[in-house]
Image (cartoon, rainbow, N blue to C red; front, side, top):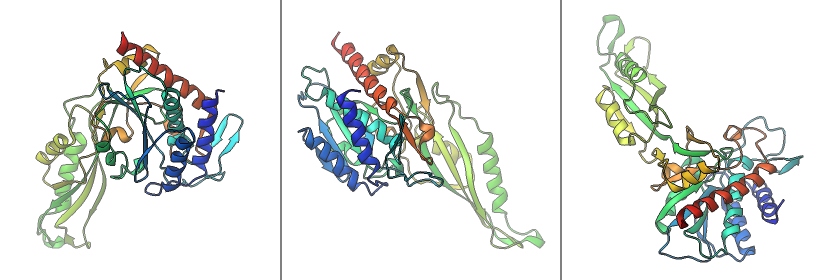
Length: 356
């Protein structure tokens, strides 16, 4: 195991031992600042977001962002170990945030350290350890993008088994209100808002969006909550329901919203349009570099900070998304070691493609 890998794992142990729920990441932000200070690397900070630049910057060269997050969800029920005690059993390191996204984060930090003093790179590296990813918060990566130079491309560190997500679904939550007219149920009065909502829901269930993403498939709209009525003998004048919409890069969130509104009788209100689908062309040099190394590409159904980046990104990192947010979350040390190696190989291959 290389020294840089040992340092990454030691940092991960410290991060696990420091609670860092979304909006409460002060402790891990201080840890990350301290780690960079130990390596004589200047950092910038806004809120609980920390970022640093490679030593030899050239503003004429493009900027490549390495980003992952240091916030966690709260421990799920069923932990058999202390979630804040980094517990190593053979090759397996247990602890809250070890997999999502501590492993990818420290692997990217190690990769940044590897290149920090390298002169002559055809790009500038920016490492950003950010907050509030688990809640897509306004004080996470979205709050620092305006502080950074224009980013040409980014690598988002999440547990993907080092597969390369070249597209990611967006998320839009829509509140709907179907409005009828109250009346007495016994006299067949009024306009039943539940029946109006049922018409909408039937259309939503059966509708197939025309444009299909090669990586993500069709847009998915699912009614997940419904509420109506005050008592058994009153025809309800309003029926509220919620639509969970998972978008893809063929449509903007607003376009999907407009299609839904045009074909339903309810009044629709999107809670936000900001969690957009993302994608990167298959012929992008970074994607081609990964493919040349044998990395599998796929479309990711889960949301990450890719949704908040306006520039092309790939999502890739050690660990397994299936372990995220589960009891006894873990990552293997061998995964971190292999992840650091693969990140470096990816940047080397990308570097070669830019200097040919």
